[in-house]
Length: 355
Image (cartoon, rainbow, N blue to C red; front, side, top):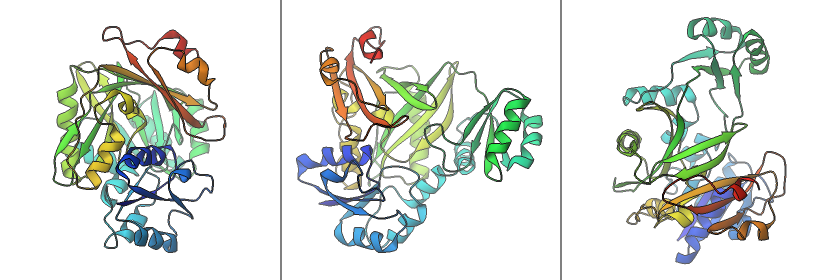
C-alpha cells in the first residue's frame, strides 16, 4: 500500500517508521523542502492547499491521512472522492475552531471550563466583565503549542492581549484550578471498533508539552474512555485521536482534542503492545486494531531546541532516544526520550530531567 500524508513533520516520520516493516510506501506533502519525514518516502514540496500537488498525492496513493490539525480542511474536501481520506474533513474542521469544538463537547455531555466567545479586541472588556479573571484568552483558530494564547490576571494583561488579538475571533476561558492535566489516546477503525490506551498525565512548559507519564489503572480511565467513545462515534472517526482533559477533583473537563497521532502518545512506541502510529495505520487501512495494553509504566520527555548528548541519554537504564533529524532552533521539538518507570512512584529519573 502507498500511504499519503499531508504534513511532513515528526509525526509523519514516525508513521512511516511504523509502516515500513509492512513494506508500505509513503508520499508526503509539505511546503518545507527539508521536512524531516522526507527521507522516509517521496516528498511533494508544495503548499497544503495546492490543488496540483493534492491531485498528485491522490493519484500516487491508496489512502491519505495528515499529521497536524492546521492542514486546511478544504484540502481534505478536495481529495474526497478521489482517494480515501482518514480522519475526515468534519473532524479536522471541528478541531480547528475552538468554539465549534466546545459546542460539540457540550452537545455530547462533556463538561468544559466556562467560556465566552470574543469577537476581536473590542469585545474583550465585556467578555472579561462577564466571565471574570483570571482567565485564558485563546484565538479560535491556528492555536498550537501555546501559540495564540494569553493568560489574563489583571487589567494590564487584558490590555496587552487585546493589542495582540486585534480583529481575530477568540474564546475567553475561565482559568481552571486543575489537579492535573491528562490525555487519552484512542483509536477507531473503519468498522467502528474502538481501543484506548491508558490515561496519561502531562506537564507543560511555556505552552508546550514537557513530559508525559503513563499510569495504567488510573481511577478516571473509564470516565475518559466513555467521553472519548462518544466523541469518536459522533464524528464517525477513523484513526488515532487524542483528548486532553483537566482533572478537577473527581471530574474531567474536556479541554481540546487532536484528530491525529499525538505527542502525549509517543511513549507507546516502546511502552505499549501496539504503538499509536501502528494503530493509526491499522485503522485507516481497515485492518484489525492492535492491543493498546501498556508494558508497565512508561514516560516521555520532549526535547526542545537542541538534542542532548546521545551517550549521556543512553547511559540511563531504560531510556530510548528519538532524534527527528531537525535543525536545532529555540522552541522547536527536535526529539523525545521514552523510558520505562518503576510500577510504584512514577517520577522521572532525576538524571533524565537534568538533560
